[in-house]
Structure formats: C-alpha cells, structure tokens
Length: 159
Image 1 (cartoon, rainbow, N blue to C red):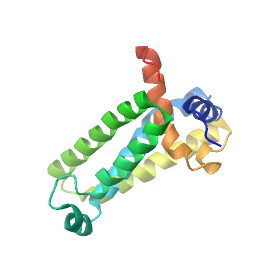
Image 2 (cartoon, one colour):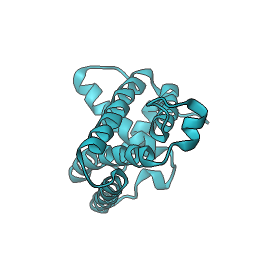
Image 3 (tube, one colour):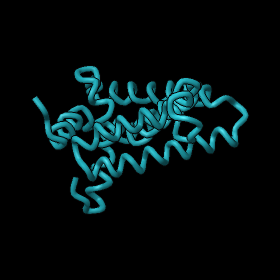
Image 4 (tube, rainbow, N blue to C red):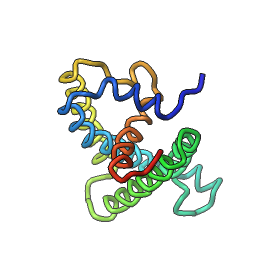
C-alpha cells in the first residue's frame, strides 16, 4: 500500500517529539546525508566514465542522488525540489572539501558519518523510542524531508 507524504512525515514524527532529539536531528540528519553523498563521490568512477564519458556528473553521488530525487518526486514535487537544492548543495560542499582539505574525502565523510550516527542514536535514547528506519528503511529518506517540511511550514510553502 502506498502512503502519502503526510502520513510518512507524521509516522516519522511519532518518534521525534523530544526537543533535544529534534535538535540533534537538525544537525545529524543533514550531516549523514552529506557524508553519504561524499562517500559515494569518493568511489572510483572508472565504470561510470566508461558508460557516461568524462562528464563531471559521471560519479556515484550524482547517480544515487538522481534516484533519490526520483523517489521524492513520487512523494511530493515541492519536497523533491527542496531536496534537489539540498542534494546540489551537498555536491558543492563535497567539491569544496576535495579542493581545500588534505585529508582524503572518504576519511572526512566517514568520520562525520560515524559521529552523526552516534548523535542520532543518543537522541533516540533520550527520546526513548527506536529510530523509524529500524521499522522501515524508507524512513532513512523521510528524515531529511521531515526537516524540510518544517522549513516549508515556516515559509508558508505547501508540500
């Protein structure tokens, strides 16, 4: 059975009512999202460049983000557009890190990924409820949309 974006956001919100847990999510969810984009970007692109040529878009991060954006498209066009902007921002941050840091991108991303997940689980310990994705992996993608829905609410944008 297909669920609406509102029912998914509401279900996600059931385990995110504690203000400290919410605050932690505002930091950790975008950090996890970026770190995954960066880890995907760090994967060698030999096969993709063979198939797609030497385009700057021929990398695993862009390919995966394209599929993620397609998922959001089926849920909500306005949220998909916001997540597209966020995804592009993550790619730009990744490029900045590659250009300006000596440590390998994958190492930086892995450190942020691990710290952010520790934060997430700590937030859920405070909340007293398990993370939603343990029930349904789809909630790994609903978390960022849930945060974006609050931004849209403040801006008066319907999703």
